[in-house]
Structure formats: structure tokens, C-alpha cells
Image (tube, rainbow over the protein chains, first blue to last red):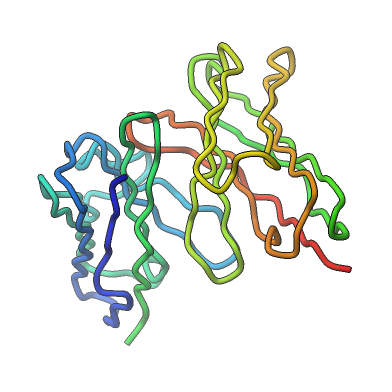
Length: 109
Length: 117
């Protein structure tokens, strides 16, 4: 079973900054199997990135997914107030399991 | 557009059962397996398993075998999650989520199940 470890647990930044969130897998993962979600308090998760790099509908191009192998990143440029939330990475593996990272909280500094 | 509308909050006593529904529309229901995800209060996301919507074949993640049952009514494009023998630790929000975008899932709004005596 693949384990996903996100870092940092909490990231404190200001609006206008750039955020880089990390997701490390316990074994190599094809980047097409990786997704990222944003979750705001009291809401369902929202798909941001799928296939490692593809933005979901309505997601602005200042949100980017990247990485390969065991190390993946979500980058959000020019942070806006609505970006402050919890972010999860997720991998779709074989057999047909799905695994989530523990989440990174992006908070206003 | 894709819509996933889940049934409302439930409050149950320990030992009871609950059945949550997830009404899907805006996509081909039988082409995409339906996943179920649990989120306890203040915690992360936990994949419970999935049901193939073309065959009804269900796969349960470790820890979700036995008391948790996925089912379908394809005539009304609805998936169900039943939890039997409820325990206080089952208190959580439950989400349905078809994997419509390769590795990525769309999500229902969630159903809060509270188990308390």
C-alpha cells in the first residue's frame, strides 16, 4: 500500500505570496495517478489537479501541479484570500485503492 | 453539469443502522465506479472503497469490511452506503465521489452521521 506524506503540516503565508506544498509517496507513482484537492471548512473537497498536472474545470492557471516518481508538488502563485484552506494529495493505485495524504493547512500569516 | 446530491444528516443510537444515498446526474452513471470517503471531525480523508456501477461489484478498504455495505439503484442513478451496527466512532461525514477525471474525483456535499446514545 502506498503511503503519502504531505509537508509541511501547516504553511503560514500572506496574500500575494506563492505557496509550494509537497506530497511524498512511499514508492514510485506514475504522475498520471496523482490528484490534488482543496477543502474549506464545512465543505466537500474540490478537485484542483488530476493526472499530476491537469487543472480541473474552473481552476486558474496560477495553480500548478508537478513532480514525478515519489515527489510531487502543488504550487499556488499570488495567493488570494480564498486560497487559504486545507489541501490533500491523493493517488489512485492498483487493485483499485485510493490513498490520501494527511493534508496541509494553508493559513494566513 | 455533474451533480452529486447526498441525503441529509442522520442521528442514530449505537447498534442501529443507517443508509445514505447519493443521487448522481450530469454524467454516464454506469461508466464510473462510485467511491465512498469518510472524514471524522477535524480529521483527514479516508477511502472506504468503491462500487462498480456497471456490475455492482464492491471493494472495501481494510477496516470497512463487514458493517459497511455499498449498493446501487441504477434505474435512478443512485448509490447507497449502509452502515450496520453503528458505533460512536462511526460519527463522521461521508462523501460519495466518482472518479470522473483520470485520477481525480468529483464529490457529493457530504452526509453527517452522528452516533450517540
